[in-house]
Length: 201
Image (cartoon, rainbow, N blue to C red; front, top):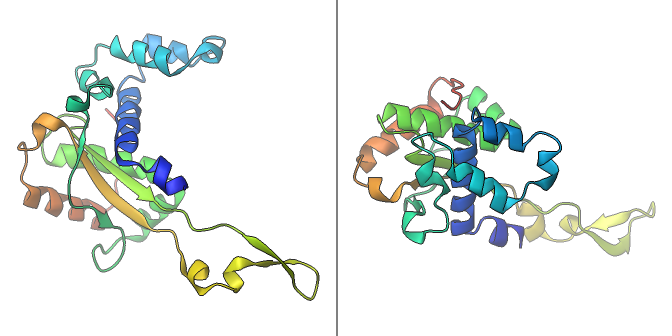
């Protein structure tokens, strides 16, 4: 149920668009003030969106247009699971993935746009990690009286492992600003090459 709701395509894209708008607006006085006490206690989605719409950063305007379906980013058709043999990932990359997939996604977004000479967040990388079932006790007890886990009785449940999938969202009017072959080549280079941390500009 978690994956069906939280990872719904349109809601996920809208969330990532707002996330990037906030990152680009982090130095704006009004946005910084909104997260200070006591203003933070009164902050809600409507107020935050209203503040973001006033930000003068040139790349923020299209990111906050989440209510206009024509301006909502589009998911590129090819998504790849971050696993061998599709990607030969370095230890540094795998460590970053385990530590914070959202931060790694933003890192990839910045570097991918830079490498393709695109404006900030023309492309948004998003690493979506599915959840494996947590402990699910059943009614039976073991010899020590401890609950027996469903995974010990079900091979299907026991075989479910978290999987990380890399998706790319693109600004609607920029689908022809790059070649898919170039994007895939650059993305593979970034995932497999030396891992450099790049912060949002």
